[in-house]
Amino acid sequence: QTNNLQNEILLLNKEFSKSFESLNANLNDVHSKLESFSVTIRNFSGDSLKQSYDTELEARKKSNEELPAWQDNIREQVRKANEQMTINGIHTTTTNGNNNNNNEESKQNEIIHESETQIAHIKLTGLQILADYTSLLLEYNDLYILHNNNNNNNNINDSSNKKKSPRRKASNK
Image 1 (cartoon, rainbow, N blue to C red):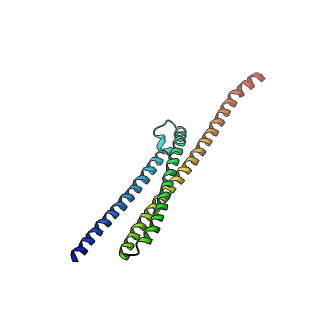
Image 2: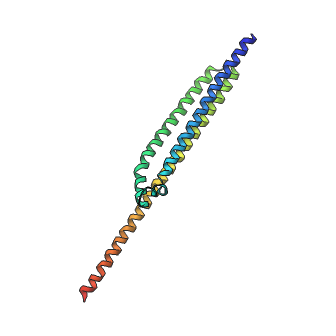
Image 3: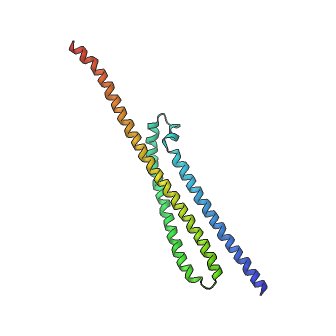
């Protein structure tokens, strides 16, 4: 009987080690995706793009061309995260109904599930922050482009008025 208990303990240790390795891999994946998104989106900010383009206006226009695709990608990741949280919620409900036999194992499974849920919430929150940042960056770019276009139109009008003024004076003489 002692050997059976020791074997059961070893088996449980292996199962929980695998579960924690899976949690760690999931957390690393979340970190990697969030970091990748944030670095890429930061690269689409006007300041970073200025290094690759002649003017900030060109950089912001290019940024506005690329950012909507990133927004779509972030939305897809949010959808997947929500879907996974729903699946985890369903899994927990069915698991809790089946694990009443072994109270200790049930508690450990609850801890693992709670960790998975917290990781999913972190991922969802991070993605939402990136989505909000991307939207703000697009709005800022739009304002910059509009302001710059208005200034260019005013400069064109000013320079055409200056060119017309001497002609008027000359024709009045």
